[in-house]
Amino acid sequence: MDFLSRARTVASPGWSRWLVPPAALAVHLSIGQAYAWSVFKPPLEGALGLSGTQSALPFQLGIVMLGLSAAFGGTLVERNGPRWAMFVSTVCFCSGFLVSALGAATAQYWLVVLGYGVIGGIGLGIGYISPVSTLIKWFPDRPGMATGIAIMGFGGGALIASPWSAAMLEGFGKDASGIAATFLVHGLVYAVFMTMGVLLVRVPADDWRPPSSVASAKPAASVVNVSARNAIRTPQFWCLWVVLCFNVTAGIGILEKAAPMIRDFFADSAFPVSVGAAAGFVALLSLVNMLGRFVWSSTSDVIGRKNIYRLYLGVGALLYLAIALLGDTSKPLFILCAMVILSFYGGGFATIPAYLKDLFGAYQVGAIHGRLLTAWSLAGVLGPLIINAVADAQKAAGRSGPELYTASFSIVIGLLVIAFVANELVRPVHPRHHEPGTAG
Image (cartoon, rainbow, N blue to C red; front, side, top):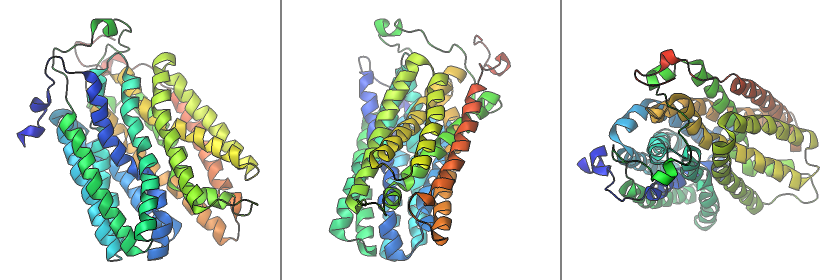
């Protein structure tokens, strides 16, 4: 296993740093399949007799485990390096699919929850943070762009997985055996693809510096270093925790229920949304989720992290308000608002590592990022719970269409306003939290 050690992954002189983002993408495009979970919801509900809230459980638990494994594994990732982390992610994520396939084949839903939610969720967390610290060290001049390139893969994973999964379900069937076969193929194919990232990734040598022309183009934004232990004692960390949690809650509720949501919204219109069109809507949201991670995080290198989060949170609240007020009056407007909301959702994920680097330095940014992702764990429960539970309650009361979601959207708007205030409270970290020998 020495092949997985950090020492074996140090780049040789002349190694191009532009080979590192593709290695990260190989992992993130795979684990980003989580965002295509809504494609599995209707078949699982039909085959196993589940409610909307029950069928969301594997996804919710997967996001919870993502945050927890990232928080507890962040220090290990920093110590052992990205190749070790990507290997652990590959084993857990793909094994989760195999266990889920067994659960679907035997109609034991708890195995699907265990496989996809727990085992696969650990793979999600370790895989998600595996390249972050490495990318920031390779691209100290453009941290927002670098993390955006890689993390956009997580948002774009469903762009591939959504139509692919839908096609397999059509081919294998939407009964328990068809779902099991689809899970099995996912696990095997993703194992091959993620291994490419394991083999390709490298870390910079201790004395490596970016090209002089690049290094001098833009000075480093931060000259201080704060340890992960000290970072969680600062108000800045907890303000960003609230910002990330509520921004994720706002987007993940739509994403997890995207396919059934758009069908519910326009069920009573003259042109209802077909199953195939709903799957296409999921893929479209995945596309803007992916593009938003690169475009908005790169923009943050120019206009600043606080300003970009003002956009995510403030405009996001207004877009939710537009959907809640206009309901099913315009299908293009609904789709456009959802697209922009999901671009902000993705942009928030990609920008947060650079925001952390600005505030706390690059010293233990991977471990700090891992701890911050516990906010994602809570949001992974909150978002789907708010959307699904309210929709189930409204459906039980005999309501339909946009009325299923109006109340939950109002809750989300309130959360975004709270997050906007938290972002405004972020200030530079007090020197007492700095590591010795760093400037304030």
